[in-house]
Length: 176
Ligand SMILES: Cc1cc2nc3c(=O)[nH]c(=O)nc-3n(C[C@H](O)[C@H](O)[C@H](O)COP(=O)(O)O)c2cc1C
Image 1 (spheres, rainbow, N blue to C red):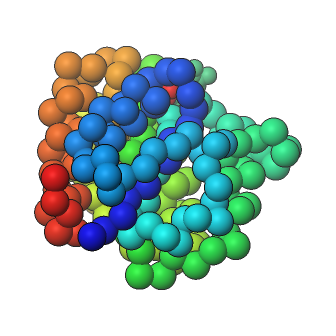
Image 2 (cartoon, rainbow, N blue to C red):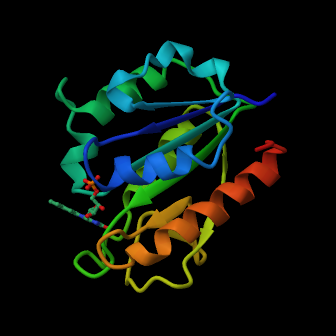
């Protein structure tokens, strides 16, 4: 049985709401969910699939090295581990209308991090159906993971989450 962990940041907004929808698509006996700040990263190698998501809210959010930056300190701990043979699936929230030049850039940051720890990134997602000019989170008309726009396309979120999680379950042979 494949074990799954769903990790997200931040709390109390769109990311957390979408993470909960995603969690509901998986067998709760095989799936754990934590916000990134509450997760003990030393347990990460006990999972076969890591689903990791966040929102794009500016470069400082990711890169600033101060100790109170949740992502930076999570990445530092993650990099002590080797996820060779494990799968990682990414989701990112953004706003394609207000930030068309940086739409879901966070997916690019997450993908780089996944590659740093040698995880196999699965769950790329077509850019069809979104309107934006540039994204660090996409190449060759595919996002590195699921892009969600709760600001402008909230009516599409449920179906996107369902399709994407179905795809991931199929790819890894995960049962409901
Ligand atoms: C200060 C700020 C900066 C943002 N920058 C971007 C951006 O560069 N690219 C993008 O796609 N969305 C950007 N957004 C939109 C958020 O990613 C989007 O609203 C997301 O759903 C917020 O999730 P949350 O409620 O969990 O924080 C920004 C939002 C804020 C408030």
